[in-house]
Image (cartoon, rainbow, N blue to C red; front, side):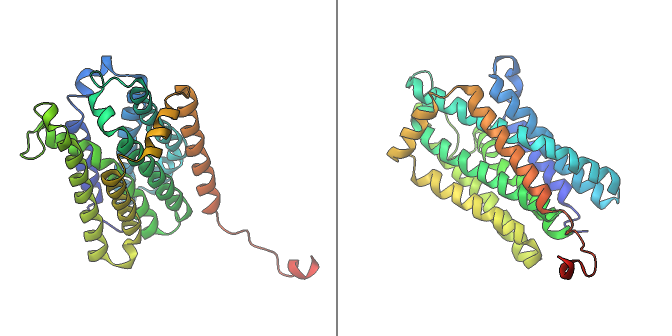
Length: 279
C-alpha cells in the first residue's frame, strides 16, 4: 500500500489544529459563533476520517475503509459548508468596518477571502479526483492525503504566534503584519512538503503536485492581492448576503462534488456482445 506512514503525518496535522486554535477556539467554545463550531467540528472530523482511511487501508481493514469512504460523501458537504461559514464571518466583520472591533479582518479581509476561496477550490478538486480514482490505489490515497495539507496553513501560523516564535509573535497592533508573514511561511512549509513527497515518490505522487499547485496559488494570491479593489468589493457584497444562504451554497457545492465524484468513479457499464450492431 502507498504512503505507509501517512497516518502519522495526518495525526501531526491534527495536533497542530488543536494546539494552533486552542486559545482562540477550543478554550473558548462557549463564545464562538455557530459558523466556527461548524467549521471546527467538521474539519476535525474530516482529518480524523483521513487518518482512519490511511490506517484501515494499511491494516487491510477494507470493509471499514470502504464504509468510512462512503460516509465521507455526506461529510464533505458539511466540510465545504463550514468553510463558507468562515467566509461569511469574514465578510460580515469586514462589512461592519469597525477597525477597533475587528482589526485583523479590516487589515487582511481581502487576503482571507481569496485564501479561503483557493482552499475551497482545492478541497473540491482533490476530493472529486479522490472519488474518481477510488479504484486506483496511488492516486486515490494521494488526493485524500492532500486535503489535510490544505488545512495546515491556518493553525500552524496560529501556533507559531501562540508560541512566540521570533518573527511571528504578535504583542500588539504594531506586529499585525507578522500575521500574514506567518500564513505565508506556513504555506511555504506545506508547499515544500508536497514537493518533497513528489520528488521522493515520483509520478505516482502526482496528487501531491496538484496539492502543491493550490498551496502555491494560495500563497501567491494572499501575498499579492490584499489591496485589490475587486476583492474588497466582493467581500463587502458578501457581507450583505444572509449567513444561511452563504453556508447553504457551500453545502450544495460539497454535495454536487460528492455526487459528481462518485459518478465519475463508477465502473464502466459492460455492453453485451453484438449490442452495438443491434443498436
